[in-house]
Image 1: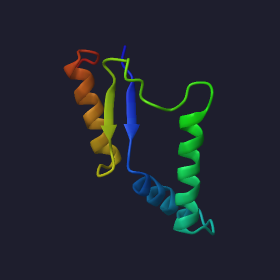
Image 2: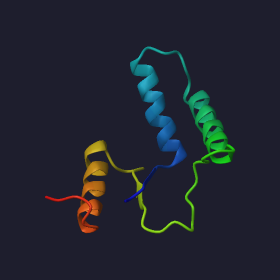
Image 3: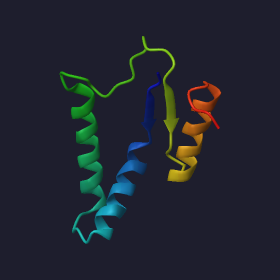
Amino acid sequence: DCKIFLTADVNERAERRFQQSLARGEDVTYEEVLGDTKERDKMDENREFYPLVRDPREYGYIIVDNTQLDEEETLQIIVDELRKRRLLSD
């Protein structure tokens, strides 16, 4: 009944992934992670089947930019939107 398009600035996503990699003990630089993130975005957006892009013909999907949000804030926005659309009860 509803699609959620979760997005964040590429630099923020790279920073998050970089911090996760460091926490796992991986030897990477931020620049490597940023480059990999940009390359993955390009591949995802241009793949033949189900490219990762918002279809302007689709109506009713929820766009959540969580660049400045933590996981709890992101989840709350989604829950609030679903409740507004009466797709989720209290």
